[in-house]
Image 1 (tube, rainbow, N blue to C red):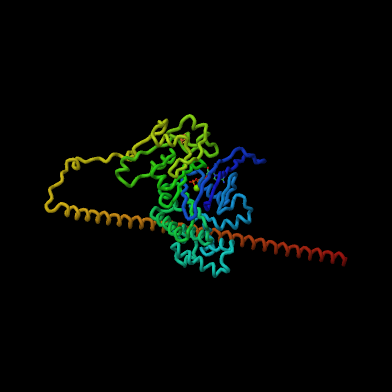
Image 2 (image 1 turned 90 degrees about the vertical axis):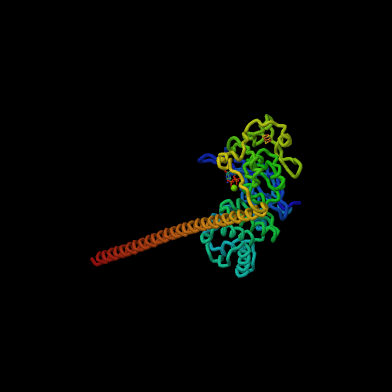
Length: 461
Ligand SMILES: Nc1ncnc2c1ncn2[C@@H]1O[C@H](COP(=O)(O)OP(=O)(O)OP(=O)(O)O)[C@@H](O)[C@H]1O
Ligand code: SF4
Ligand SMILES: [Mg+2]
């Protein structure tokens, strides 16, 4: 049995309308029947366009959204059926790392407080001293200084904040971590560092990951298995290498065709499949195959009959009636456009007359050695240029980070000031109210005195 098994998971959000009575007028079919298995110690990459239901599926595993139908089995226990208190205990074993590290960290809590919270809730560590020691060692492991403990989220860069997010998951000693777009908010140079850190941690601690991304390049190297989602369902699933070597579903083919290939010869021959139209609304998904409105190979049957995710050999599962015919080239395309990827918006390299007529001058000496020396020189030059470029980029990124930090500090200061003004106003109000009360009391007392006197006078009279 796999560590995590999803079977027919559906998450349908009701669409409500009405002022007095909340009438359900429809549903958003965010996740519409997903079955997959994640093996212990492996990484399952989940990719697909924005809005196809990746985050909702991740949240359904942690029961952060209600599951409409289906089961989520962790280590033999169906989480969908667990009562609240038991689910709370299980939640320690399943942690989530979010896309927006700043948004997911409370700006008013320091790092020690943020990381201790979950530990206290799950009874980890006998006292704060023990918890602090554990937090320190994990902060060190994720590459943060130990003085980070007393600092606040806005004092860190984007990459460091994501490391804090990872540390927050790790202190709870989870089995599975769901990383929802863990690097898409980060600078490209930082993305690789965070992905490498996740890989190292997996190796050391035997963690199991579900990595969600809309970028195929991010999941390619970290994933053992990749699932491709379209409008709430999986359309293809395969071991990472097999999926890249031979995508079988037309949607996966289109996604892959958009990814540049490092080999210049292959890149020159690369064709790009252009899909027609936008992603349909998950509140009103197309009938039959959800992809038929954009599929270049769609046939009549596709608009009425929904294809099952079936075994297509070579470790692939694919939800397409015609995957084999498309692979064999026996099914004609009915729509869509295929263009040379290198021609997309890029003008052909203009060939200068000079280049065309240039001849190689005769070289004295042994050509091989000369060539080698020349090559070495060129390589050195290229290396130097690359290093300079990298340094420049790093500098730029650093500057941008500094500006960002300064802006955040400014914002925090503004918030603080606004709070102070608010407090001052409240104090003023309270003082005014107190004074008014006192005046009222004095007035009342004076009046009472007057009445008393008047009564006395009356009595005397
Ligand atoms: N609480 C909710 N109530 C109603 N609809 C929702 C809710 N949460 C998500 N949705 C809808 O469900 C669909 C799937 O959303 P989801 O956030 O899971 O997509 P995603 O694949 O993670 O997208 P992205 O790549 O932009 O993060 C979207 O149409 C979204 O608007
Ligand atoms: S079932 Fe039909 S519409 Fe769907 S992906 Fe296959 S060919 Fe395209
Ligand atoms: Mg999302």
